Image 1: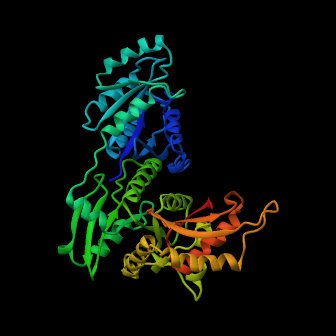
Image 2: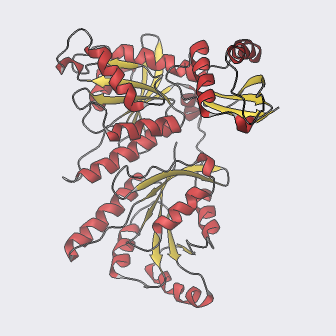
Length: 437
C-alpha cells in the first residue's frame, strides 16, 4: 500500500523549501507535478530504501478571523484524512502564533503520527528559542533548517521508521493479481463503471478496504477473469470550492495509481481531453503504469462515419508523445463495450509483464539497427552490438553501444517504435537506456 506524508503549516514557515529538498534527494525517482492545482504540489521520494508520496499543502492567506479558522481546519483535515503521517511545520523566528495553536489543537486529536518540525533553527541562539515549541504538547518534535538541510535526516528517519511493511498472506496473494485503477476527474462515471462491472453477480465480489476510506478495492472474479478493481470515485464534495475537489481527486488518483498495474483513464466524451486529464495521464506513465483510455458517455455524442476515428486522432494528439494506448468508446449507462475495456486492460497487463528472451530481442532489434543506423556524430560511427531487457516492473531495455551519449532522441524514438511494433507493448510506457559496451 502506498504511504503519503503531508506537510502542513501556515504560510512562509518553509514548507515548500522542505518539500523541494525532499524531492532533490533522489531526482531519478521523483515526480514533481506543479500547477495541477493552484498552490499544492505532489511528489514521490525515497529515504532509507522506502519510497513515499509527499504533499505540500500550500499556505493560505486568510482575510478575516473566521475564514482563517475554517481554512486551516479544512487544510489540516484533508491532510489528516488523506495522509498516513503529517509533518507540522512552524517557524522559530516568529515563535508560536494563534494559528499554530489552532493547528496543534486539531493535530493532537489524530491517531496518525504527527512530527512537529521547528524550522529555521540554524544557530545555537535559535536552538534555545525553539524549545518554546515543546509547549504545543506534541511528542515528536524536531529542530531543522529547510534551507541548509540541517536536521532533515532525523525527521526522515522518524517518518520511515513508522512505515510498516504489511505482508499478510492475503496481501501477498492479492499482490499477485492484476490491479486496475479506475482514474479520472470527478463526475466522469468512475463509480458507475465499477457498479456496472461488478453489479452482475454481487455474490462473487468482496470489498477490501483500501488505503483511504474512499478507495475501495473490489475483488472481481467473473467469466474466468480475476483481478482487483480499485475505485477512486468516492470523492464527496466537501464544499462548493472546485479547488478542494481537484485536490481530492488528484490525491486519490495518486494513491490508486501506486497500487495499480494498469490505469483505466475515464474521460467525458463531451468535454474531451482537458489539461487535468493530461496531468493524470502523464503521472500514470511516469509512474510506469499501463494505460487504457475509456471515452465515456459515447451514446450521447452525435456520430457520422468517421466520428470515432477523428475523435481518437485528436485525443492521441493531446496525449503525445506516448500515443500507443488503446482507446475504447464506452457507455457505462448502457453497458456498451465495458467488458471490452476489461479485456484490453488484461492485454495491457500482459504486455507490461512480458519478458522477451535475449536471443529473440537481439535477432529482431539488431536487424532494425541494420536497416536504419544511428546517425554519425562528430565523425563517430555509432554501433549498437547487443540488447537486453532489464529486470524491472516497467519494460526497460539496455542497448550496449560504443558511444552511448551520442544517440539522439529521434533515434531513441525509432528504437522504441520498433520494440512496440515487434513485441506488442501497446498501452505500456517503455524505458530505454544506452550503456557503454
